[in-house]
Image 1 (spheres, rainbow, N blue to C red):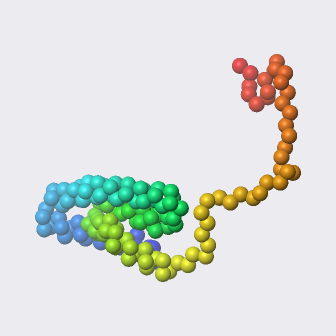
Image 2: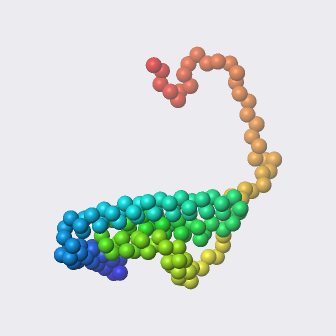
Image 3: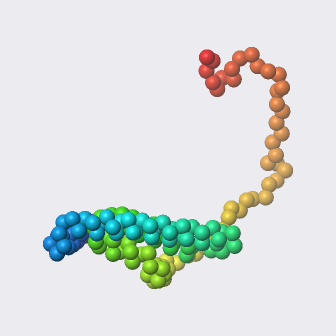
Amino acid sequence: MWLFLLFVGVPVLEIALFLQVGGWVGMWPTLGIVILTAAVGTVLVRSQGLAQLAKLQNSFQEMRDPTETLAHGAMVLASGLLLLTPGFFTDAVGFALLVPGIRTVILRYVRSKIRVQSFQYGAQSAPRAEDDIIDLTVDAEPRDKPSGWTKPD
């Protein structure tokens, strides 16, 4: 039910805000504000996204847990989606997600609701036994016919 309210409530709120702001400043300035926030948001999301990517690569190189960096990167991605969506409410939430302190508070809240039972980094391979080795012999004689996998021209 809350998802339905979200999908109905947010567009209704955006329309109400468009009407209110448009009544105060006019149609063209309102459209200009929407385009300006999308442009500024794109620049900010790109710079913060690249910073999170560098942190992620660094955590992989240092063999550290990348969970927090991935979560921050996902929130930066979500802020980009919100900032590209026309509207004042979505822009406000998108710009809020670009603030590292707000992302940290959200991450702390989400961590309190989730319990991680195990974490594994990298792939573990089973030891190979001698029985796993297969000896192949290749016929070196050329064939006059196609192999059957391709059709002749």
